[in-house]
Length: 331
Ligand code: SF4
Image (cartoon, rainbow, N blue to C red; front, side, top):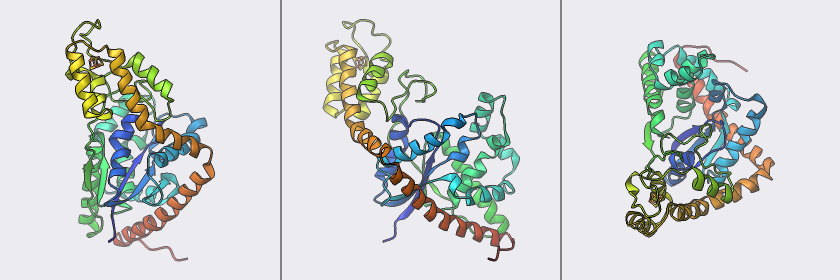
């Protein structure tokens, strides 16, 4: 039986962290039984904000390595780089002629990014949803696993498909959203979304020791618990939330109970968490090291992925052009 198609992407803006892993990649891996995947390193999206040109290539390859190490293997999906498939920007231009500017201006991400990039509010920030719609609709996926922060973009993608179909005739399928069933975790500070730029993250590439140091030093607990002899409340402890994802049920119960009756200190409680996080990440970290020493394999995977993506994407793009009454290019 032919599998359904799912598609998603991540920007190569820095080392992936456990927030990306739990909220996105782990979810994608769990969907492989039902879906074949297209996973994109969306480099064109990453250039709409200021970035360090000298490390961009490294970041792109690192993102691909991390995808592979997390289990996005080429027998189950195609991994490719967005800028290696020219149809993405071509279809984005077509969609630019379909989307009302007012719809782009009301996007939360545009407003947030404009506020944070006051010296570089470029047109790409505004038209980002056209490229994202193109990334998605070129592969006619049945489902797009996205985080809550991308839900508005996916809704706009569906609207773009409807507008195109209404103007030129039925063509694009409106994809469904699949939300991750893993609760979103906050960063070590317990206040904000996990992010490398906020230095409140645990990256997939950290060593066991670095993970331990970050959690012991920066992991915010129940702030009312000042002394080891104070009783704590796991329900308001960010580190306990992490336990509920990484630790066994028995360990969770034991930690919660010991916290409430002050028979465990936060350092010991965090050490249990560190052990479990390192256990979960250990095979991924090993694989990352292996792939870092075998980059030719990674380039081959990306090349195969782009070849497959180009075949599908150019056929969908040509179909869209025909619907629009444009003249096909003859060889
Ligand atoms: Fe949080 Fe554990 Fe400390 Fe309780 S003992 S406050 S659950 S880190």
